Length: 293
Image (cartoon, rainbow, N blue to C red; front, side):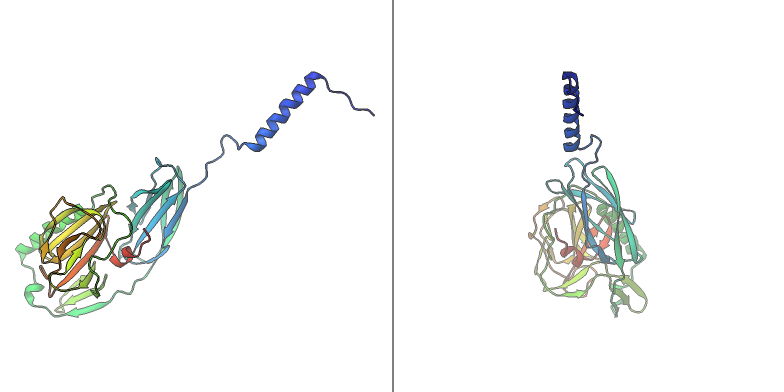
């Protein structure tokens, strides 16, 4: 049987239908979801007191991510086109296990996880002169006021100043590691929340990264102390200095000499106490130095 010839009206309808079908095949649906940002946590397995990074790529410049781990907010800055980076840390007292990482990026919410393993912190017993251990009631009030002020500094969240990886302020061996439990004169116990780096009186102490000086003064325990604000809630602490070469409010660049190593404050010999705080959480400085920034 011969086919029926198409009329002009039929040809026009066929052409329109064909064009629509081609467009539907080529173009994505109007309500198609945008490509999800890529989120990376590194390292995914850490130990108590360690730092880590969260890197978000494939998102808009205006879509600044937000994230929280163990109820602690992570603050982000740009690390390139469509790239954001945040640095976080988990307390050395935190329980081991798997922690949810709640992230909002590119208008989407994601829940990832980070694994916290037990850290093997050393313990040392020390015998010191009583004046190095006992604190009078008057001085105890001084210490409380200092701690209150320091906490307010460590909770400060400012714009990013740091660039690239953090460096050790003194290139030397470590005498006391982060997390060390110190039992003094069998009566008093403290947890070391930084690292002690060996050195000679007068050795140069350098800024671990770009930052702004938010404290440069003598403290009861730390002696001559410098605190740098690097932005995003990240601060580095330099204690027991013999000399301060910067003033509060100064801007410093990575590697600048900010002071000289010494033995001021509650110290038994020349060394540098180097600490890192992330949103008032003491983290292992060695873990920060290893971050791929």
